[in-house]
Structures are given as structure tokens and as C-alpha cells.
Length: 174
Length: 174
Picture (cartoon, rainbow over the protein chains, first blue to last red):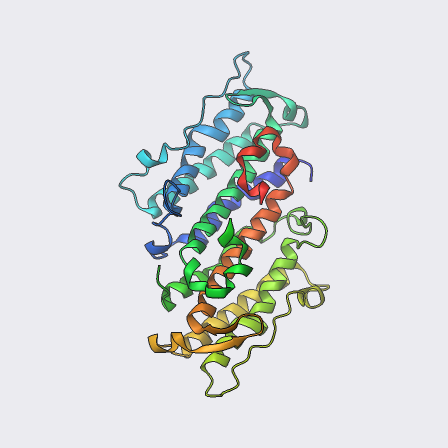
């Protein structure tokens, strides 16, 4: 499948609704536990998605499209949510994500990105030169990646309870 | 996390809404392609969930709870959806799943399952003796497993588009 902005927005605009459908009013047993060690709980993952809206995806898009020679991205802090989500409820951070995402999609549309813009580039701190279409594709896949992580963390809570079926459930082996 | 019926129903009743939030009116490019070879598309996975509602989870629960000595499960046909979904739209099979799931949760509640029932057993065609709590836990994890599969199949459509980011996106390596 080729990159298309409208097809990408289809996913980006659905993610908040998917998370609300999955998580609104659910018992905290499903959302406050992680997968052991330094892994993330559902709560942590949603906090990470908030951070992405605040400092990553749209910010980097704007850097690529700016008429400046300095097109370097700031490194993204993958652990900032442990501070920023502190003391909040899951509902609070999920609402925060929903609002930020709505605003960012609106800004993304206002940028009026054309086919020719998709090959414009920015400088990623690890990868070096990346294109706008790679950044926007990654935004989409990153959403799906974290939905996948969220359902995996939830499934893991019942790992021992499935008995012999564990061998048929790929999600418990990832 | 210990098995609890009400916590399990929390997941089971959310799955149709999650799938509607993710898939309603989305472009078919996201849902009609598979991961290559004999793998399933999003459409195929939803068809499989319909089959599960029709012949698997609640049927097996009722077999376990029946006052009969014959507590053998019929083998589940993992490929029946290729026939049963033929000619239907994604919207049709998703609505079908939603209705069946609503009905099955209602029946599940009506069974008035007690703590002491959770250790009652049925005979699985592959595993032999399994308990009711293992069956019901697996129903829950099976939902999450297929949500995970659906978002993975969707993410895969953009695999090549993410460029160097592919190495950070676990979902593209599963």
C-alpha cells in the first residue's frame, strides 16, 4: 500500500475512539499492571501517546515543512510520561490524548500537504535524513503498535488462567 | 490476576465497540489485504470472530454446565469464515458479530455461574479436560489476540513506508 495522507488520517482519527471503546470505565486491574520489570502498563502507554502528540509527530512535520535550513528533530523522550502522568487518572490522560489528537489532525490538514512535499526531509537524531512520508507513515504504525501493546498487556493479566489454550494464543508469547 | 466473571465480561462486551471504532467506514485498503500467503485479512478475522460466537464459546460453556456425562466439545472450524463471510461486506459481518456477542453475553449472565462452577470441566478435542474458568479466560484473551492481529495486519500495509523507523516498531516484526 502506497502512502496516502487521507488514508493515514483515517487511522489517526480513529485511535482515540478505539482507546475509549476499550478502556472507558474498565476496572483498574486491566490497566494498572504491566508485564513485569520495567515494562509499561496500559496507563503508561496512554501517557506515552500524549507525549507523542505534544512533542513528536506534528512538531517534526512542521520542522520538515519549515523554510529553514535547520531541520533537526529534538530527541523524543520515551519516558517523559512517568512524570507527566503522575497523579492523573486514566480517564484524564485519555481525554488529554483525544483533545490533542483532534487538534493535531486539524493542524495537519491545515498544512495542506501536497504530493511533492512528501519527499521533503528532516534530520532524525538516530537515523539521519528521513522523509515526511516516512514520518507520517510511522505516526500511523506507531498508533497501531501501541494499540497492540495495550491489548497484549491486558491479555497478559490472564495468561495463567487460560490453561492449555496458552499454546494457541500468539498474544501470550510476544 | 485471578479469573473473575464480571472482569471478563468487561472485555467481552467492549470488543464489538472497539472493532466498530477501528473499522467503521474505513477504506478497504486497510481491511481486504492479508499478510501474504495463507494469512488472514481484517475481513477474515472478523468472520472468524462471528464463527466463535456461533459455535464455540457459549456452546462449550453450556456443554460444561449441562447435567450430562457427555461433555465433549465439537472441534472448532478455524476456516469456516471463508465460506460463511462470502459475498458479505465488512459492515455486515461486524454487525453480525455485535448482535451475536450481545446475545451471548446476555445468555452468559443468565447462566448465573457461581464460583463453584468454575472448576467444572469439559473435554477439548486436543487438550482433553479443561475447566470452565480456563474456557472463559480464553474467550477473553482470544478477543484481545484478534484485536492485536487486526491492528498488525493493518500496520503491515505500511511496513515499507516507515523507512528506518521499522526497527523501532515491534508490530512490524511479529
